[in-house]
Amino acid sequence: MSDLRTPSLDAEFRRLAVARKLAGAAVSAGSPAQGRINAERWISRFGSAPEPEDDAAVETRGHSVIIRPRQEAADSPWIMYVHGGGMVYYSTAVFRPFLRTLAEDLQAPVEAFDYLKAPEHTVAESVRELAAHVTERCRDLAGRRLVLAGDSVGGLLALYLGLRVLPEVFARLVLIYPVLDLHTERESYRTFGEDHFLDRDSMRLFKSVLSPFCAQAGFDPMALPPDDIARLPACSVVTAGCDVLRDEGLAWVERLADRPVDVRHRHFPDLPHDFCLYAGKLTSARSAVAEIARTAFPLDEES
Image (cartoon, rainbow, N blue to C red; front, side, top):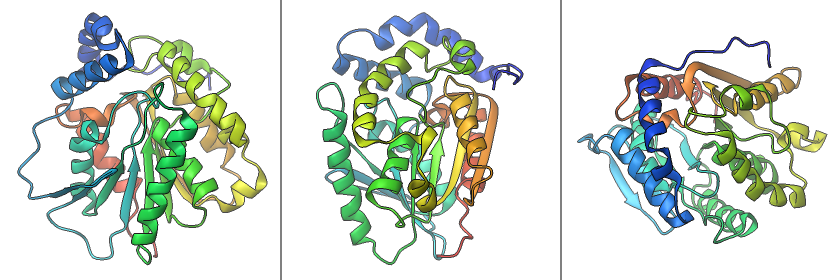
């Protein structure tokens, strides 16, 4: 993918990147627990608006949060969501403003799942518990059309769950700037490795956490065996042009181009990783989320 023109970061995010660079040490310093607090404070200050008076119903469960929009479309699917953060950061609380926006745009319920974090827990423990909770909810929702979505590492987890844990259960997978390659650093790692919200050093740390589990499970999205390809449901892939993960997302879409799989791809050339978390305050991010709702979650598909 090195022949792609290097895009310029959106002006709103460019200004924010300067602020983030100045505050970078404070955001990432300290223990994992302190790092989580710093990361959540950053998103709360620069990304999330106060929860709107949109009459959405929010139900907090033991391991998930369900957001029902004010108006739910007839025959809407149930969206299950696995959040990103490298298995180390974030929670459904951080993602709630974005998920609330998504539910409103889709006029569909969105249920987001929490999971155990590293390094306090292994990825194997986290995935095992997450899989159990998602499986239980799939049983509860038997007969309803289900869509499984996730961003960043949540995209990787969604792909794993959709292929290895609950095959042929989901009508569609939606992977938003997903982690897909745990082995190769493509050109986008060099181009966007610093000052673009997800830097390559952080991604290397996250991959060191993820790689042992994926190796043990024999799960490599960039080299899916024929059995996985055969049971891959319809997919939507969202990529960001100013993201270290850009090139692996584009490569994955290209690999599936000649396969009998419905793959929809939406690319935002001037946005960085994690842009969805800024939809509450940045116009460019809000517009992108609306476009994702319109194109990546096709609601007119047959049940």
